[in-house]
Length: 291
Ligand code: GDP
Image (cartoon, rainbow, N blue to C red):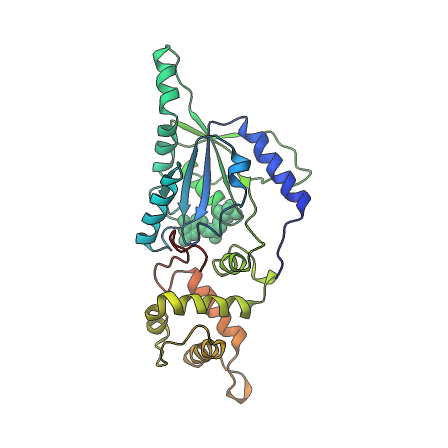
């Protein structure tokens, strides 16, 4: 499996972000709380440099709260401030400007001591596609803003968006690319909806997703689909296919000759996973990043 960004595209994305860094005080690195490692750009430290950084774990409504807390501790250990939010409903989003300001508090205090009235903290949201950058910007702005994105040929002046009284954001977020070279990363991005299904085969993604779910959240899967089958051995592909087939029979995904339509089953598994129907699911934990 190879999903890649054109190298020239990466260079351009990097340059665009670095141009914007000159204008801002703080970067807001957005990650998917379910897969903080797979949704992270492999050279993010190099791109963002030493700017104060707030890591925001988005889509925390879909993730396992206990694991999210462990990630927060992990990223703090890396020297970054970190919070978890749900941009779709706005839960804890108002902490973003508060934490961003805290990161600059010393500078602000120095300005106040010199009699300077500090201006609003200027921030840039960065993250891979579909991690929720636009959703978060709209939440912070308190209104819907048509984000132009960084399309080639579109020249438009940067605009500041007010995010509360103490913060302003650049209207075009920084778009980063994920770590595509790793197959596991590719599948995790696909199962959470960060990569469009067309890029990978839907049955492959669902098979991979089910394997991960059976491994970590068997009871939720069993309950959701009212399965009677025993917990399968995830090293045995046939056993996972048997689970897919039982799901298909339960959901009426049958073709002629009573054969299970695996493509249809795959669609159901992925749709329900992405909608959080199996409960709060974290696919990566800080102590176990590669399995
Ligand atoms: P962008 O490409 O980074 O700008 O991502 P979008 O803001 O377009 O979001 C991608 C998808 O994720 C959309 O369907 C959003 O509704 C959804 N989304 C964004 N934030 C959250 C969140 O915190 N929770 C959930 N459940 N969905 C979210």
